[in-house]
Image (tube, rainbow, N blue to C red; front, side, top):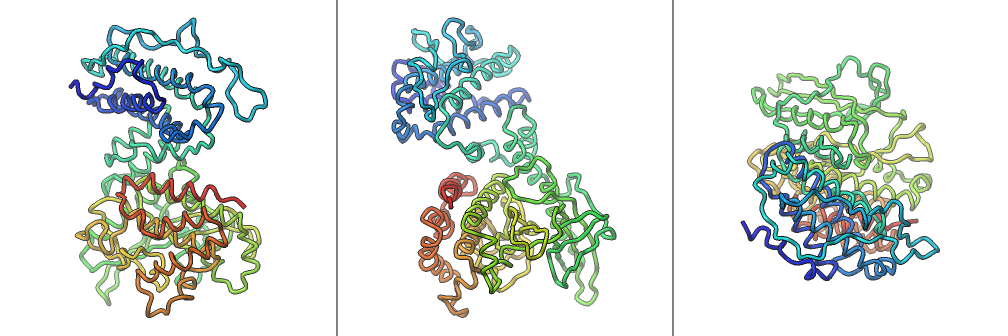
Length: 560
């Protein structure tokens, strides 16, 4: 047992460099996350402790502590010793957790850490802060005591010791964020660095979503992931609507998306059709349960706005039997609330021949914003461990008050009718194939998805997060060059030559240089990262950070 906590026997005097102290703090977090105690209070403590770990990691990454980038900031250099003292105290908290003879950590009365009454170190202020604006940290001079394994976490929880220590730890880390706010702090980075969303246990995810003081976005994603992992057939409270109350508005024959009214309320509808040989009811039941899961997720009022999904009203389900082909057919309408009576897809805008009016509707700054929102929406969807499977410009939708409205509001991501959980054993159902769909498919996913439970994850017809990201890259390319993927590739390849690898080669070698000219290096580099295969090597868990750094963060640098 000693090897698991040998790090803690190091005297504070040996902790010199800032990055070393930070690493010791992270080791303290890691050690206490491994404590095996299944009680509710212990699990809640571990979830909250991990949230503090994430906050400290986000702060350190944003400042570039490990790479030494923090030394480029003169304010940080001026007060680096105070920051090191603060991290030493954070490190000591973990030792105090384990020592039954030491009192719970409290603020020293003579050497206060009352940051709220002291001036903040703000690089935007004209006046320089005083020499001791961080205050003096109380730090005993004696060597740090050895880190002894407690009899059990339950003992400490019964004594409220961990609760008090966690409260103290929270204040220490919050003060670091307050006094030394990172140059650019993105709340999403905390979600990307979190390990709490990785678990596939729906009960554990649901529990995390209810823990007090957890970030609201984190709680919402944990809840959505918990719904995704519920077994099919579980009662999830989906709102089954009545087909007789759904009245389409000017729907053209064959339209899978249309406006309608449900009991007089304006709604947007996505229709899904699937069929199976008569008697294979189980396959259709699995698909219906998956759509129910989608509806429940989209109904969550607390889901992050960054998902860019419409508020879901519920689903309309109907069944019919085709005796001619001996098939059982199901039709499922996912119904969303809508504020405006008309919608236009990004693909509709790109396909219009006149182009002039549509370019005015999507000027450069708006195109940057649309790309940024779509990348972040896909990131949040993947954090909830769900695949979209149909990231295409036809599924990026704007809602307008008039059909030819010059002003376009923010985009919404639609097309969730084929979405599913990213996990082995998940069935991929038959989908409609159109000639332009091949331009959005990763070269390794060119086979039309079919219902095959034995298909290995990542094999032909199986989808993955990497494939969603590739599709996003194609949409980013369309936005930047203001043209459809079909036309972009068609300028360089005849239809008979449009093989999967040749399509990607045209996009990477021909379209990206043009994109660089029109949209700038940051936008082009983010798009290239989606398309060139550099992200293919990552697993479904490890791809979170590279996608965030190489795509989402690069797009955020784009301004017009």
